Image (cartoon, rainbow, N blue to C red; front, top):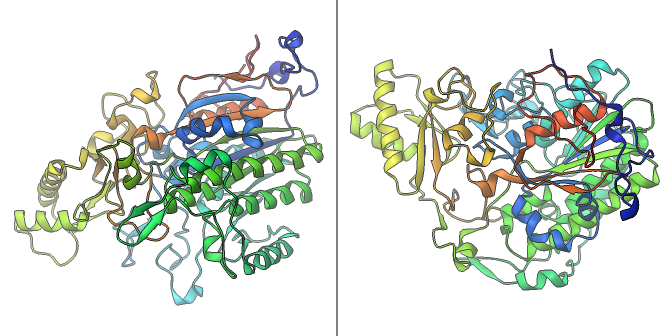
Length: 566
């Protein structure tokens, strides 16, 4: 059996202090890193990285001097937060991980709401996301129970009992999908502070830190000055009848907590807590390797609330760069030997109102009648089916569509054919894929489970992309994919004017950046995947993983003659 192994020479990184010694490996950082820091910047597309790269002067500038893969891909079609984060530290596609979307439908559950949240815990009745009961005092229990494969940190702990596996994020699903089912410590934002639902895993400094955040949010926040390179994007864009984006500078009034998440201050708070975890728990100070996963969520909230092309995103990325720089500086002062990887769970698309002004004439909002409910009613009429309950179920205008299980098998076949045809005929629909052709045992062999394709990921067909996020027990009876530049938001609302989730490259393509002190800089422009991150990190820390347990491959991070994957 072939194993992914760490080679001692892997970390004999090339010194970069001068051209004269550029080909000689530094001994300063040889051996395994003591701390792996995996950072996901939610909705940080490869397009945003490329557009703003020349402006970075802080943490993102530092990472840009490491091993740079600007054409990373979330290979799957369902480009959402939960499936995207599930790929980063597991090394497998969402279909194999079981995390097919943020939400999916399970018609077998007893509750009225059939929607399953990716980070809910079905072992605790009444605690599903969106189905809160009075018995839980308005609370719910988040966990990685639906994640079917181990994360890198969980694999490491099985062979290194002293190693710690910790995670922190602005979102529960981000922290849990990167930390896994058995993290040593995991935190996420819950409205008035960071908390966890993992019993006994509290950080002693957390109560005081949460109090400091609440005190900060109680005070007004002055606008953030617009950087010079952002001025060109400082243009008002009307959205709908009563909304304008493109000029907001993240000012907050007193008690402005609701505005906190969609601001650069949110990521600053997450990184500050991550710094406390490193310092207080002494991560990276022992003979073994620790893993810290960090989910930075502000870019996603900013993208949803204001789009990706305005002054808001420009300011946000400038602040992100600065905050990451401060975080790395703090690790340096703590004298930690750390290896960083930074990527994203998905990309994003700007709001159609601005795209149209920028020559994307096909940009549009989705037809409000393009829903499972509306299509289901059309099918009922066409097939003369009388039933009070919905015929079709879906969580979104795109993605998985489920057929009622109260029908006979023959009726289900007729409904599928009719519904797929009606979807196909809609001018905003690109493709409708029958779930049966996505089953793992169908031919031809497609990527998405244990098989891998040697074809570049950007050349995968839509069926291949859908296969990568398909799970036979959780996915829909058929999959609906919208045309390029169709925003699946019928009417813009506060905090939600633009989104992601499509199989198109603006949502799939993300940067993948590795950095360690002494690493020789190089840039590899050809496509790689986020499922390649876990096997690459496994090689770096000397973790042996049997062949076939990753969908991705190890990326050689040694820019010289050595191969870090052997």
